[in-house]
Length: 420
Image (cartoon, rainbow, N blue to C red; front, top):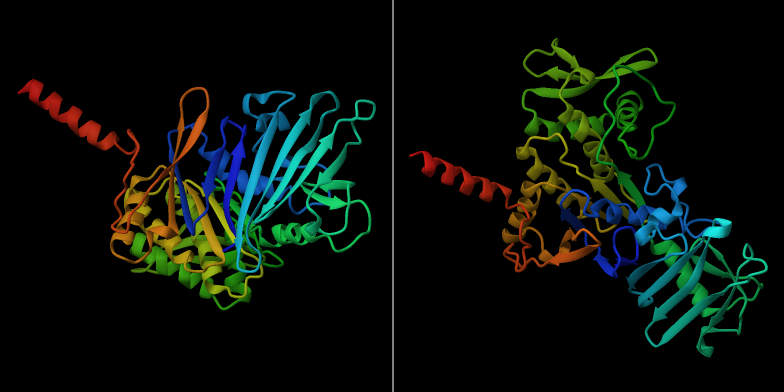
């Protein structure tokens, strides 16, 4: 294992400390505007503070999607002098369990953010770095660290790149530096697919080379398919059609290439002369296509150099409920590759029921799935773990979650009784 959990405090709508444990398939549930998206987008935000040479702790503007209009939008209550704290928990065969925690302070007067406190905790050792406010020169913060002698040569002067400290001097041999390097290596590459995928265009220009990811809006999926047909062996398109054959019987997806332009079309299996441009079809197929393409790329690829955490918001959007269960199976199949995990925000009861069914059938262990419910009380939000046993039962299902059908049936029966 590697990254096993994320923690936040005073982040967005979460006032109190929250822990999100990451399993091969982690699912976020909750009502609209409860805080699910804030948690779903957190891994991508933290990545901007881990793989950077910038002194800025985080760079939300570097993301391909919006998570904050300004840094204060990340702070609970949007306080101009507020602080937000993030934690990353790792478990490795080589170094065992360890964690880092970074508090980021906003200094509104100079529009600056600094890591105000940093903690590295490993069994038997702790490293603490604290920020010193320099009222005469606030744009040049200083830090000092304290730690036991086993950490290596004595050093008190550090600087930060992102949320991780670096020594200002050239001394080598600092034991804590090996842990920080592990953080950079173990933190997964984040792929994010937003809740609204791009509508297909009628024509595309043939790419000079194939993208490797479908993109935040799924906008690169058509280019990936066209490259597979024009320059590859067509295995990617064939695998996508294997899936579509179950959910869209009678039709196959094809690439219609004309010189340096191409279109995506649905072709009738009964009469190949009947073709419909994907731009003229229903929204559901277009919305799910980027997900199918990305999942197929991973299933056909091998030798991935870095772990991947794929974050998907509402993969079921615009799909018939019967297709929601098939999506759950798609992610369960993808989780068999232990270097790819999924963080999924969904409103689909069918999606969750399929996960529970597969656990009950013994096809996946409940330890491989983490279900969470995000609840907002009008002031702040809390994250609740829903416990799942080896028969797919839940011991603490929250009130009101996916109870709408039951309540509507009761109301329907009551209305019918009143009229008879």
